[in-house]
Image 1: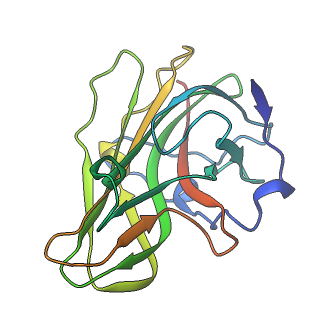
Image 2 (image 1 turned 180 degrees about the vertical axis):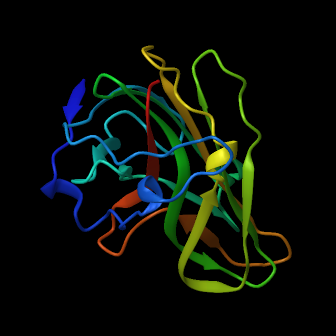
Length: 214
């Protein structure tokens, strides 16, 4: 179902990004974001961390980022908890409709969550991103240290010269794979990890860089 992503819905969730205006290197020119509305179709989602109806996407007012919002993305481990609960994943397949003459790339992703990790527990967050028909990227892994009873944050950043740009003039779906892992390790009580914000929703911000098709 197509979701037209308007400004006010995610002001509290989107961090200001200067990436779209940053200088590029070695022949890559990064332009200001287009002023037209960006439309994202959430084509498909699958995984234990984003069951149907539990995820949505929204675009920032300045077209420099979009946010994936979840309502049920939690990995946990410990006594009496099934081992399958220790790994949760989500694959989002989105189609980004951009104004004619523009292309985009994902240059930074911000993950935020909350963790209650006992001493001895082992936890991590990881993700990869690729366009349909292009080579799947390697997973980027972020260990989350224990003990922890607090919010956590992790960021994936890619230099402009190394990003993969969406092919100009083509409609290709963007695949986003994320994963949370928790194991009890040497701990004897339960631990868990979520990707969420302080209001209880789960959010991940994907920052755009824009380039005019030449």
